[in-house]
Length: 150
Length: 121
Image 1 (tube, rainbow over the protein chains, first blue to last red):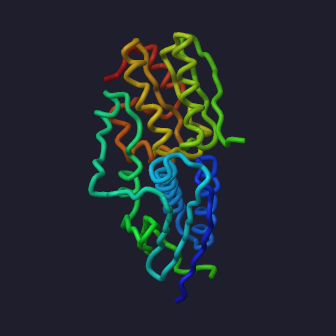
Image 2: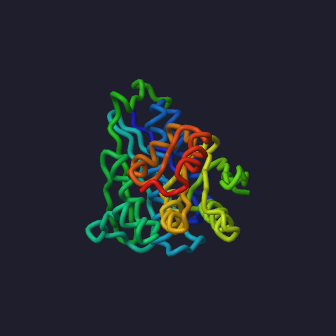
Image 3: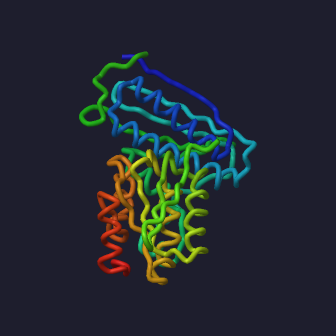
């Protein structure tokens, strides 16, 4: 079985989030992932990219976000790379919905959503490059009829 | 041009917001502006009709989180109706059904305002 990789770079502005979702959708549909899995990846990648824009790049729309959709025989990995401020997962505290509503505070739920939708969420920093890898193992409900276009 | 729009539709004392398209970090401000307009006009009973809402991320959910308490304190509420299953799943992922009135139809949402006119929780 071959490994397929699709890559695309996007400007670090929220106006490009729709484009990111379309790219992820196209790649996953081409690999014949289930509709549910496609939606899960779209949302998880959206959340990851939004966090890069807001936190890694502090809203600077002139930077770049690199998205790679990687299909391996038993899994799909979507890797999002940036060169902004590093995220430290150990410092993240998952917010409570009721508390957030009481405090009229939005935000902070992106990481929680990623962790609930994906089988693995891994953060790495290599030099200036930060990456988050979102992985779902294929087969069963995630299938993928086992056929990929490339 | 954004792939999201909010339509306003008064139904008696209730304001129905028809959401169309994709609600993300880029378009969430449009929903926020719509709710703020309702508040400015002293319309605190809001039904959000999600029949044509194709997508929502945590940024969109955050708008609901930020305004629900204030509306309820003023005797109103945001009731969410007619969500597509794939969109409902995102609300459910964060536990929204525990705190928000999410119903199948706009008619049911409107009738709940008639029933008690007060917040459910």
